[in-house]
Length: 217
Ligand SMILES: [Zn+2]
Image (spheres, rainbow, N blue to C red):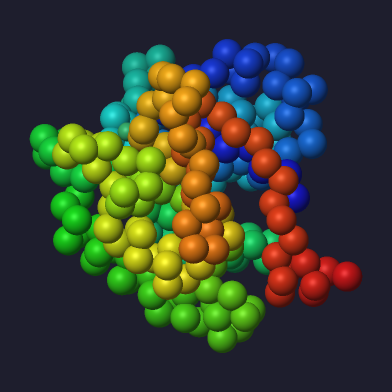
């Protein structure tokens, strides 16, 4: 399964009529926040593939389109606080960043813990039903002390780090940390999880997942 992930900045290479040729082999798109709705809608329409997203901290909850309010990206699926099974792929997501100025989609570490804990029963059920808790975790903010920064808005989330350690998803995709230097680390192995800062865009092929891919053959 080929995956395209995007976050934080509109990339002209993608927001482009040639996107279908460039990313025609993509099976699924994941957006990790701080993106305009029109961009996500463009991708979902051009590629005609499912797009799952969480919002970032710079999201306008409402975008004006020809003076009509537009409060979510059409044709895309918001994964915030959800645990889903998409064609055998177990996915979960949490939006936003740490609270620093009471803007939208900002939460304290405590509120992030609460949101993660609410997903636990479904993750346990996944393990019981499919033999795995979770395959892909998506968020806007990074986990605590992985790709994060010292200033409050860019500090990582402690509950995400615990989630990775406990439920061992194959991949955690996040955004929020802008990459300006070529030597910035954007991919880290943590326990059994490949943690990826998808700032801009990334394409990847998912590794075979024990329960899921065995079932197909
Ligand atoms: Zn952000």
